[in-house]
Length: 368
Image (cartoon, rainbow, N blue to C red):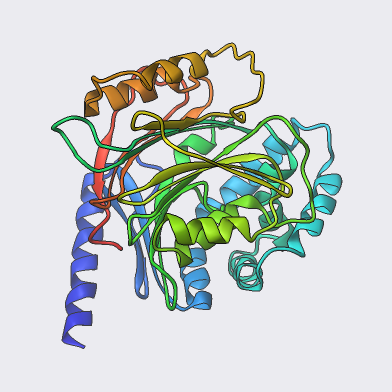
């Protein structure tokens, strides 16, 4: 009891200090029972603790305002850009819903009840990247043996290039899920997204997904972001993560990059297909194609990344420079550098057209 009282006092102090420091941030610090939203180095961090149902209730209470705004403004706006109507999109969402694990369904229904957002909108927000390809264009790479004398463990770098429509980039945050009976993990995300596109768990297991543009979508599979979340909640290393990945239906062609503190791989996955790609000369990368695909890319990421395989001058500054050169400047909303062996992450959030990536180092050890 004394420990819990001290913990809540420390949380309250953190929130008060954050309110004094933050002036123009999208998010405002808040507390709800054992969970809280805070700001560290201008990076919003939502810490959730409790049972499966409590996690969803706490999330709803702390994110309600932001969720409603993104559903009403962003979701409706991005749907208007598609050829398919909302009714048609929802019909595909319902097909995928049948393959989503029950606990995630129940959590999303709690989100709906607590925020008064229609369940169909929350479901659509979590299936949209599967249904409508090419919303997301990403670059992921790993330097498996660190960067010279700066750091010896694997370095997992990631550009998330995603349609912001001058809205979504303002809502990036870290969400820490500490659910009873599950491995605690951090998801780099935004409100309403209940799956994972980029994240790391307590054991340093790190995952990210890149959509592969070729191929069609099967709606008789779970949304792929839920598979990544399942991996982080249950796997302690790349072997356990690979086992989960190989035993799940996959909705569309993807590059799934997975690393722990000692091993790193890219998995090319699709309907009834999986291929494990190994690092070459301590370097591995993925964009939006499979290795054997013939690609004509106007952004020239592939040629540039291939040239880095032969580079012996890979320090931590170079890692950030590669992210700068491979991000799509009209789409990039998150640039991330995970350090799996020490549970830290360098984060750059911001407008897609920002000139330079400004990183903030966040220590996740105190949250996981």
